[in-house]
Length: 590
Image 1 (spheres, rainbow, N blue to C red):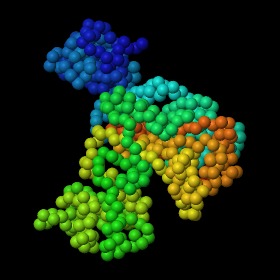
Image 2 (image 1 turned 180 degrees about the vertical axis):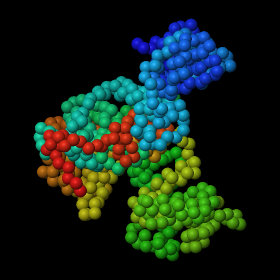
Image 3 (image 1 turned 90 degrees about the vertical axis):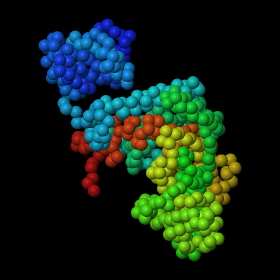
Image 4 (image 1 turned 135 degrees about the vertical axis):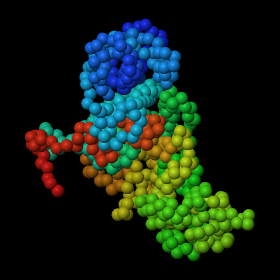
């Protein structure tokens, strides 16, 4: 080995020992007759002392030639630092190494980003030089944390008789919500493999095979629009269990998450996690992934708005729309420019506009002022203030449109206001299970689409609605939400071929199409497929939240950028004409 110890290992217990360290030049400090080299590896930093008045001339010349990020090897003796020079922030802060030999293993160009700085660096630079970015403490610590999290979850699941089993990376292209990445076959021109969006069908086949408890850290490939919590390739903690109920799945997930937070963050999270129906989530928070760290609930005031003479309210209600509001504490201080900005934000979610009313305190009575207040009679104003439990200086933010548009706009606005107004503690972690999702929704053609997983089993008390009113069919579907982020999705699966075919029929998938896309799964179900269910947890999302990061790119070693490009290697890229000919492919210019 080129080194006897790492740069984060030496303490006063090693005084007098001859050691060899290898790493990168973090910093060089010239103090006249003495130079200090800070040598760094992923374990830490060690200070090396070079006495320019006594040292070997060759070593001194090498020291003077050192640049940032040169890769070096140092040999010397561990000595105690002067008391005034002790650095209590470093494990190695009580010692330094008196140099005896220096070897430059490889020189470095001047780095395009500062490794030892916390200054913000442009993302395109970080992505292009990711191998240097990974040397920086914050990103390095994130990757180490993610490794420990993987080991911790693996240990928890193995302790409950789960088997870690790999599923194929070349699969049949099947619809799963996003576009597939496809791979052309050289041996079978005109035919293609797909990279899996998830291991869904194969983990169900493992249940048919009798492997009753499966998991893997699965790479999932999805050609979809990107945002902070999405990537072209992401990792799931994928699991499936046989002979289980929804509650059994919850118990296992809560067990490994409780262990994870306890061991890695020293935080005690309380289990079991609370449950919330999809309907309550949408009615109260506007989104099916509610952030429970703060209040600011959506309130339905359609009954009161209907009695006003405000034409916008009247038109919306006649068209089966709703009128809902948020009551922002101390929001009455908002300027016209600020309320206009809120309205513009909501337009991005399809809402045409917002109405604003300020709550004032006059003569020991709460009153409505400004904006739409003029449309509320004294009695209606009193009813509104009572219904929303208003307080002086509140700002009532009102939206009127279809249920879907109002929910999406006010739900997202609520999250924005929660962050902008510091209504929650960033270090809090609030989990909740969202359950009882609808299985179907009407499409524009008047037919039915599956809202989530087409292999999800309807709840027993909803089976009759499959024939009479599919809108009332709730599924054994569940999401786990953490701080307003959908962390996990799963369901109890359909395991009977006739029920699966019934769902296919309902969404307009013919027997021929079903056979072409899912024939191998339907065939397997005919051989005593057991009841089973499972889930997939977004591992990158989880570790990003635990590390305090807003983007999953901060916990992925080599991610794509926000445009779906990998600046490091320049992919996607053009391939040689010879490769295309081998694959019987031709580029058609649009």
